[in-house]
Amino acid sequence: MGSATTQALAAITGVLDAQQVDAATARDLFTAARTIADSSQLGAALTDPAAALDARSSLASGVFGQLGDTALAVLTAAVRERWSSVADLVDSIEELAIRAAAKAEPSADVAGELFEVSRIVSGSPELELTIGSTLGDPDAKAAMVEKLLDGQASGAATLIVTELVRALRGRRVRGVLSDAIDVVAKQAGRTVATVTTAQPLGSAQSERLRATLARTYGGDIALNQIIDAGVVGGIRVQIADDLIDGSVSTRLNDLRQKLAS
Image (cartoon, rainbow, N blue to C red; front, side):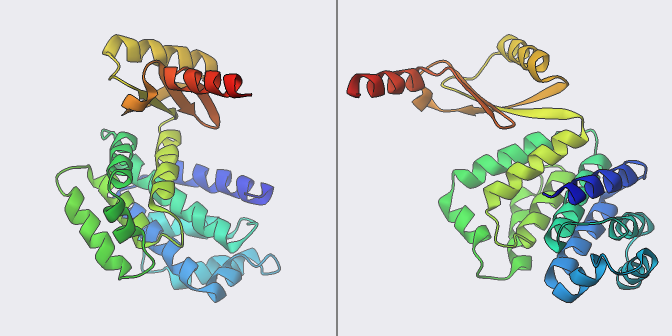
């Protein structure tokens, strides 16, 4: 992501944060991202640095005038910014859609639900292939996922997953879900830590780990736990780009490598 895009995304995130949003806002933003991604001509016009800002805003208003007022306000603000590429504009509008969905349902543990969906997908190669394949109707895949999640996840999490499946744009399902988890956590002012252990952590252990990570990384920490007997013992923590690996399996592997060298 270029510096221009970083600044632009920060600016329009501020615009979204100042709005009252609902699920319809999120759905509208997902629709806008998909529409721009599907039209190279539209994307080029909306990001053309030589075009007047008012012209770009007018174009967005004309194309997306049927959307809700809140989504349209965010979109017209977005196209007045400078973007490094059309893809960056699309990805950023999609991120705002994810933020809007989570913001619309603040009582739900959307990040945790997305993590559970990601675990289900990673545990079922057949499901991952079905919804991640470039073959087949994207709307049909989204409908299938929506049916699978019906009653099992919040409306916000269901909306995010179905819309991402509808518009993968060559990305892997687990990858877009992982990115969405981070976006939802950021929207809530939290940092996600994925914890892998051989046995479930008790509540006291979880709180101690959360407090330790909070002192190191700052802010509120959300723990997503994976149970994997292969770690043998100890704990593995992935947070942002950092990997803290104190598992017995890793130490044994390190010892084997030293003995073999």
